[in-house]
Amino acid sequence: MSQQLQYRPIITACINPASFPSVALYVKSGPNFVLYKPAERPLSQQDLQRLEQSRTDTLYIRSEEMGPVAEFLEETITGIMDSESLQPQVKGQILSQVAMNYVMDLFTTPDKLTDVERCRHLVRQLMNFITQHPNAFDSLHAVVEHDYYTFVHSVQVASLSMLAHAEIYSLPLYELEDVGIGGILHDVGMIFIPNTILDKPDALSNFEYTMIKRHAQRGYECLRDLGGFSEISLAAVRFHHERYNGDGYPFSLVGDAIPRTAQITAICDVYSALTSNRPYRSAISNQEALTLMEREGRSIFNPDLLARFKKIVGGSPSEE
Ligand SMILES: [Fe+2]
Image (tube, rainbow, N blue to C red; front, side, top):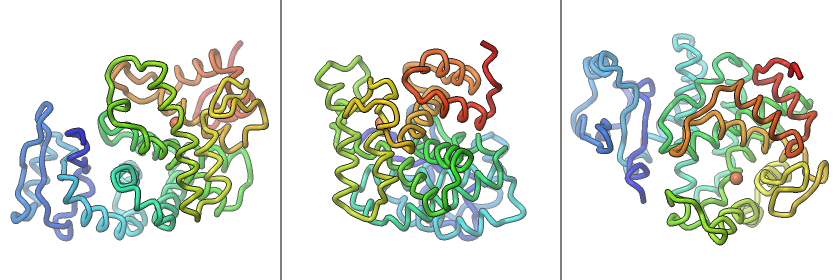
């Protein structure tokens, strides 16, 4: 396990000293994680003030101690989201944190995939948040640095995809939640790809790229075999790398042979990747990403859906 995955980030806004579980907290200093307070010592209000003064908005917890913290946050998230004293930005950060913990849990302990209701509960909170606070949308992916990209990205794709489906199609709430479940799990097949390939800093060989490409079908087969996932969720996982012009994988489907939910998931996936920092390049702005996707992606995405997506995430119509 990489050092990053041995520690889980937790934003300080999540930490209520009165009820937060007793765990050791760490701060990050360069590449190292340094003990900030041991488990036995309770976190005080003064600690939180000091952290605020030093602009430390993220602490870290050893991943093996994350269980009680994740449970505590998931139990309290409904109250946090209903709270009138918290700003929408902070709620978005906390929700993103909780959803990200969930995805990290799945990637490290795939047995937890059987708890579809836990996934649905989180997706429902995301859905409520983005429909009530569309302006706070960016707070959903503002939590941590790129080391945790896969997990933040999954939450972002789920949120974007639900938002786009809600605007473009009038789906019943339950189906929108299925869209979110598909979004949050779209890359779950990556758990079957060896870490030596996923963590490789250099360019991938053809063979390694072929292995990576298997994640869509492997993710689908895993969820199908577990049972409890809808056709909508399964389609997002299986077909999110299909491309409108037939250039995608695993089946090189063309046009509307690709389920519409996967067409939208593909757009959200690429948009989220372009607007996130990666080890090999910096994020580009929302507007730049949309322009690039329109210019380069005209044939690889459904042009109608891309135009609708552009309006939804705040882009103005093309001047071309
Ligand atoms: Fe993928």
